[in-house]
Length: 181
Image (tube, rainbow, N blue to C red; front, side, top):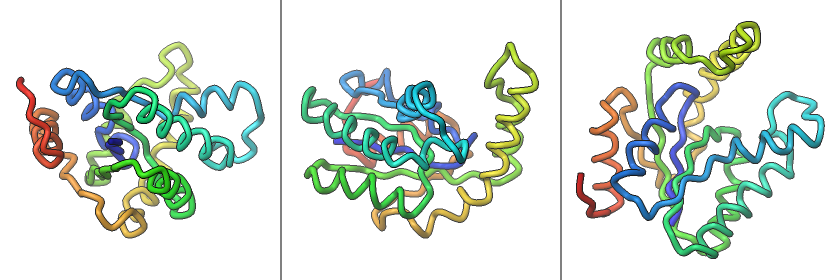
């Protein structure tokens, strides 16, 4: 099983997955951003967004499938994915592999997203880069918020302004995972 946690930058994807991890210890955490960082170190990314690399999309899907097939454990994937073509490409590969996929999308108001983004430090040793990353994240908020119509029809929309424990409980309940606290 794959549990894909989607949402805008600052919506709480990583926080939710961090909350799920101790309550569902057999689950693996797979962050597709790591694939992007590896590729960025090897090839130039003309648009600045590694999701635009066809190889990134292929590797993300293949590695997710491989993790499920090889280890037989649930895989938690915190990743913003909103381009309709890319959504279809990656989620289509997961579906074609016959893997059960659960999609969650954290909905958060623009004001809260911007406040969360402003409160994060992406590159503490480089304040200028930190600010560029914040601007980049904020510049994609609108597209992320508008993407809800292009996601798989069985996507579960969650109130990303709930507390992390409330979100964790909600997701585990929706998945039917019986775990202790």
